[in-house]
Length: 143
Image 1 (cartoon, rainbow, N blue to C red):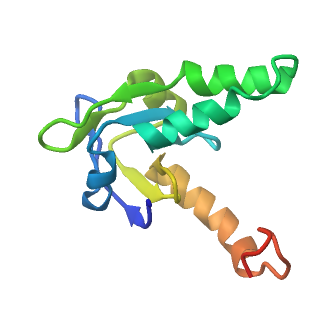
Image 2 (image 1 turned 45 degrees about the horizontal axis):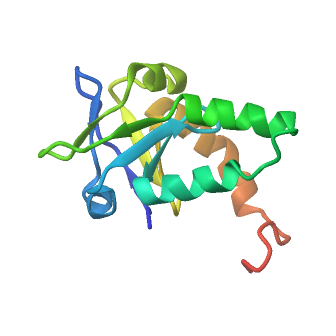
Image 3 (image 1 turned 60 degrees about the vertical axis):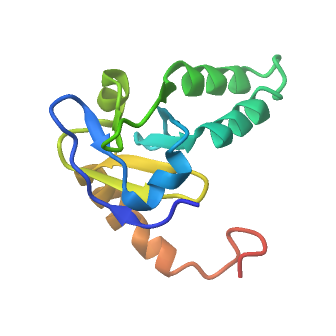
């Protein structure tokens, strides 16, 4: 499970050092994909395979499903961490998420997310008040 907030740097070759807490789960390889809200999703290979199996069960006749599958899978990249636990973030994904040197990597349960630090801080500032003031059940069974 991916938890916490980490602040690695992107090196000049477009590589990120995976947070130590995530390394064991990602040691067998990672899949990077376009995330919603202009971040990069980071999945373990088995979790990504589960996601692919789930989304490809959507009816082929559903335009929204076809669009989602195309956007999600066309930007996905299978990567293997090197001996220093670095993973290359492909240029297309760096551009998509506006990634520069300063990054914020957050744990999001079954995945990690890579954000441009400035974008994460803006997102966090915008969403924190709503999170703090939630009065009703947003996620069934959570509270």
